[in-house]
Length: 246
Image (tube, rainbow, N blue to C red; front, side, top):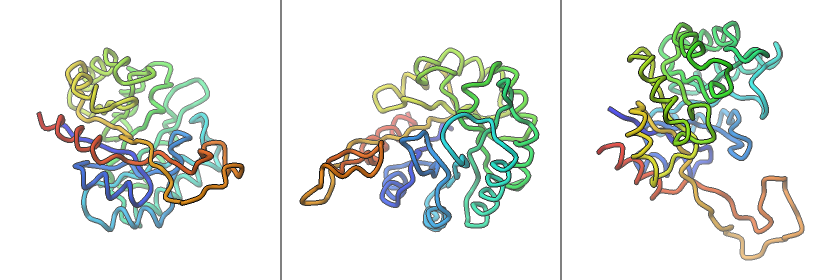
């Protein structure tokens, strides 16, 4: 059975994703930066809904996936805190400078999450030097799934590699297609890859609820001057949910 994972982080997005049919959410903050570790309060909120699987993204910063011992320690503490707060599992990944899976760090992460955790090796996979070798390493570490775009800009463009990875996995680990997934291409991605799951942000632009906006005051490089933001879109999630059922 195929599943749908939606990455989101704010309370409205969490509620919308589950209401529209998401089987699982990847809970994160900083989507404009590719996703960062969310607050523990957000983990408690999402997990407390009891509406679906809540996997928490563990990523302390933007940039590459080569982590210092201090970062590994922080990530490990974040994992323990997230699981204690009710998370179903984690989405995490770490690499060595030469582009291989950092087995030492990942073993620490898996151990911290515990044996029942629903663990995903995230899109750090897409910058590994040898995806076939990385797949075997990740299986050996005990992860339950890999999120990948097939080392391409989008899952549709990387569909051929995703299909090969799923064939190599042979049921030993789930392969989840993500990056650029939308209602318009979801069915085609599934047809080309036979992926076990789809991962999407399924967002659209939401206007600010403020009557007036100080357009000269910027809160950060990712903020729009008119206060608008990208938000989880019920219709997009629901359309993806419906095509998963076909």
